[in-house]
Image (cartoon, rainbow, N blue to C red; front, top):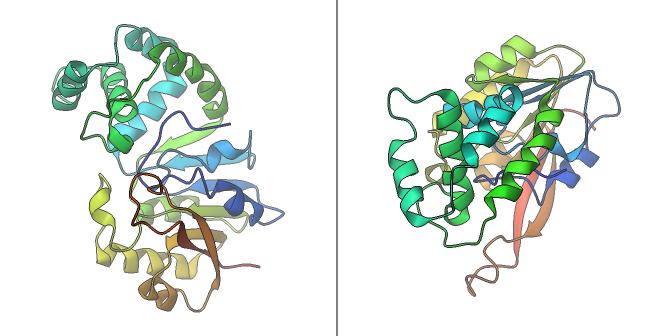
Length: 252
């Protein structure tokens, strides 16, 4: 199934490549940088125990409200239209004091769905059917029914859920592209992530942009280069047709 939102750095085009490289046996699956959860949604279930995590509290609130309060969230969404005026209002006010989690989730959802490239900043001027978007939440609720939803820093999350039978999928903000993400991720965080997974009891599979810094940092692990179509081809004629990424694993 597809995710119900788009997100910066989303793995819609790479998810099959990632899942094909999963180990044959694992009993717990943890998405450390969940985002739109394209890899999670690629299957009805990856393991008996699954965890979705993201550091962005508004994103996590949307996932939690979809899981626990889906009818109320749909009811709130039924009051909305796809319009520039509402987009500007929601962007400015969805996190003001006194708003319920459901109200915040609905407004955040509309900001993401109707913004340009899901950047949450600029109105997209694209046709969106709110009724269709609202109905799809039924399927998302069912998929999330047995998923633990967390809002933790990656280091804390990994320490909590690390077991020998665990598989961690990590999709951090790509190196030197951190400005495009809503949550801050510094150069020190990239190194901290590397340090944390050195003593991992379980397995990990990690997606990154192809650059010398990441290749050197993870040189002791199994690195594969993969390519996908560039998202901006068709919009900007000077963009390369392929975007190269790395998939890093501590197993083969």
